[in-house]
Length: 336
Image (cartoon, rainbow, N blue to C red; front, side):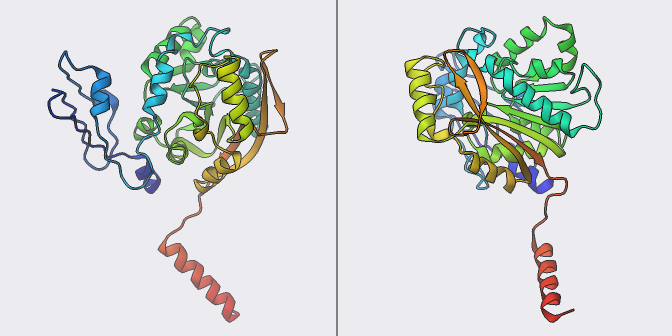
């Protein structure tokens, strides 16, 4: 686990450009990932946060194409919509209706894997991590099924919206906790804690899918499940998911998605399996804009849902393993 954890750690050196009077003491010694609550930021009145952000330079470790799963451009998109999560007729209406199929998808698979569960609270006793929870649209129904849910989102305004809506239900207040943090921040705090990870409509917005999956593995228990819904990278998904959905019908705001960040199920499976997961299910999803509803389909050419399980004992590799394998092959070759 130590080797995997190191992959999710960042060594950032942020330097403000000379003359902007901005102090960002964020350099951290080896062995840990800095916490956002420890960041100190002081700027002169004439320096905007946006300007300061644009002047920051990053130095990343060579182990990944990115040192974070958070894409600043995506943060800016969702910042403008942080107060609209619970408007069922607004920009997130398609996500509200998606609950009709994604919640049963998660529930039924988990129940099929459990030997017993209490009636009325089928997910009772399960610890779930909802990554990129937004305003809590999926977090809350999972909590109502009895699970103990932790929802994380790097955008503080999203978490404020989620906390406010949760406060209306005393039962959910006991079952759900929200944190404004990235997945990498959570990796620093805990290890193999959750029974289930949910990343619904998130993968197509992260900065580094490989790093994202590795960090998911860090916080998921062995034999734990991960559920992902996302968008395939096809010509059809570009036409329907971007041109029609954003520019013609206005189902989601223009610029919500970037086709280059969509990912084919085969590629996502490869990344998952290379990080110790076994993919169990891949199902196509289809949205009907006239009815405002989702349904399952055999085709995964646009949207799809995936379920994978973390291996109990990941296969080890290294000099000792290679040596043992060579010795075994030698014995077989000599007839021993």
